[in-house]
Every structure is written in C-alpha cells, then in structure tokens.
Image 1 (spheres, rainbow, N blue to C red):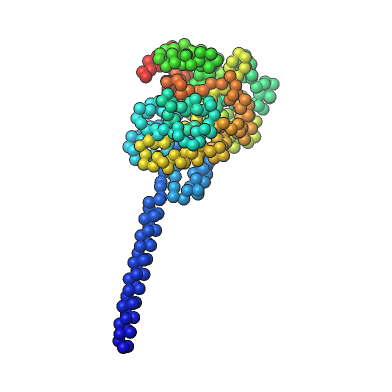
Image 2 (tube, rainbow, N blue to C red):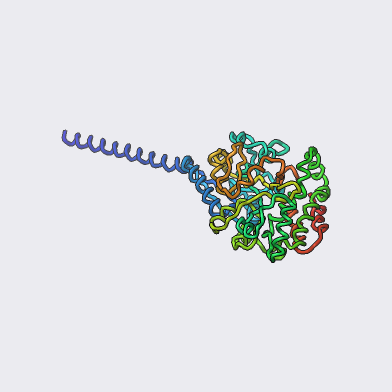
Length: 420
C-alpha cells in the first residue's frame, strides 16, 4: 500500500512539473513575440541642424514616443546642399527614411519618382490656413508634404549704430538708398550679405512684386510656366536693383561670395561695424544668444517707393516616403506634429510663423515688425509652388553672375536656357 502511495505521488509530481514547465515556456514565448511584433522604428531625415531647432525636434519626438512606447523615431540631419545629394541617394535605395524634409525646388525635381505619400486625408489638414493650403495642394488635389513653419527674410538693423550716426531705420527705398550712401561716405560698408539667400530674395521681391499685385496674377504665372523667358521680363528689375547695390559698393561683392548664410554673415554683423544685414529672420535668436548686448531688430525689405515688402516661404516641408515600410505609423506621427501646440514648439524655436489657422506671434521680440506683413498685400513668396520653375536655384546662379562682375543679361540667360 505504501509503495502504491509513493508511486501515485511520483506520477502526480511528474505530471505537475510537466504542466508547470509547459505553462512557463508558453508565457515566455508570448512576451518575446509581442515585443518584436509591436516595436516600430521610424527614420526621420532633415536639414535642421541648429542646436535650438534640434532640441525642439527631439522634444517633440520624445513626447510622441512617450505616448506611443511601441514607436522609436530617430532624427538624423545634414546641413546645406549636401543634404539633398544624400537624400536622393537614400530615397533611391528604398532602405532608409520614413519621413524627410524637402524644399520646393527639389520637390519639383523628384515629383515623378513617386517618393511622396499623399497626405490629403490626414485629420489635421483642416488646421492649415488658406495661404498654406494654396501651396500644399497639387493640381491633382494630392498633398505631398505638410509645412511646419513660415520663414521670413529681413533687414537686420543695428539700432545703436544707426542712432550713433543720427540715422533712422529706413521705411522705403529712398530712405534706404540715402542711409546706405551716408555710411559709404563714412567709409563703412552698409550691408552685410551672404552668398545664398540675401540678394536673391531682394531680386525676387523687387522683380515679382508686380505679379503679386496684379489682378491677373494667375494668368501671368500660367504664362511664365509655359515660357520661362517671360519670367526674365519681371526678374530683370530685381537684378538691376541688386546690381545697383553692388555698383554703389553698398555690399562688398568679394566678401559676399565667400559668406555662408546664417553663419559667416551673423559673425560679421555681431562685430557691430555695419548697420544692416540681409538674411533669414530665424537666425535672430542665434544673434541674440551670441551677442546679447547688440541692439537690433529685423524689418521687411525697404525697397519699394511707397514702403517695405516681406519675402516669406512655406518652409520645412515634411514628407512621408511612399516607398517606406511604415507609412501608416509615419502618418500618425505627422498628424501629431501638425497639432497646434506641438507645431508651435517647433515654429517658436525658429523665430518663424505658423502655417496653421492660429494667429500666435513668435515670442522673439526682434522679429515683431515682420508680423503685420504676413497678411498684407506687400508680401511675396520667395519660392511659390504655383511657379513651375526652380526659382531658388535659378536666382542663386543669377546672383552669383552679378557678384562676379558679369552682366544682367548673363544672369537672365540662365533662366532662358532652363529646360523644364
């Protein structure tokens, strides 16, 4: 009897151990499989490299990942024209990026490669203002990107230096020419410019302003899309204005050719020797941080006979790779990014303006003079998606021609010879 009890106990023990072992193994497998299946890694490639911008981006990404623990987003950035060379290779490989940034010129170049996922069905598209949507929506009603800011270009004015010389901030072209001539007579080069955005935005503002003022704006743009030489008729005035600045020595052409945007130009301006600088308004926070004692503000370009004009851009366009492996997850993140409070964090970090319907003004007091012009008639887009020409690139080449001493005709020839 005792042997039977021991035998029964032995069988019962073996049976319990088998059940326990089987149960543990199944539980372990479920945990591992669940984690592997749920974890998604998104790659975000961009050209925002400034520390303050990267911090804002990383805070947005971290907040999203905290809300979605199964998502990991890695942001990688490269500055300058090298970014687009690398981007094109990465997109062609189909192995890298789920989300990426682009500008209008490169958007036009890559449109036929089917890299851009249509974002028109995102729930947050309704948050964008009319001006933004006019640029975002394509002729086939698709939306290949969302803008995350509206950038502006302006005239940085050294207020203390102007006051020291009993000069005022110029409000129109006559005053601007007069104050520049005054500083030339004092042996001071009045305007700091860089080799990229400074003078081409001046040329675009002066040249394209009549188009944006015309009641036939749409017809004119349609005509120059068909015949780029028509653009030359308008841009000629802009190039003439830039050449006048060069000929009058209001800028140093040789120095400008070597001056990198929002880098070398800022260093020169911070030396407190020149009254003006032409560059992106988003750099004001960096000037303020580097030179807290420098008293300056940023104003629209005072180049019209009856006032000033603002050049702005629908900027930092974020796209989803239509050939990427995680389109659904990427769209969810873009919807998060385009919520008002989330996007504002990024906009405010850049001293820029919001592309959404909200009317919040950036905290940066240095750029407040630009705000009223965003909704006025005296503003143009530096890179208009309705113009099917790479204006940014073409005008960059044209300005380089002028800075190296070549003629206006040679600068215009670049546009005439452009093959669409």
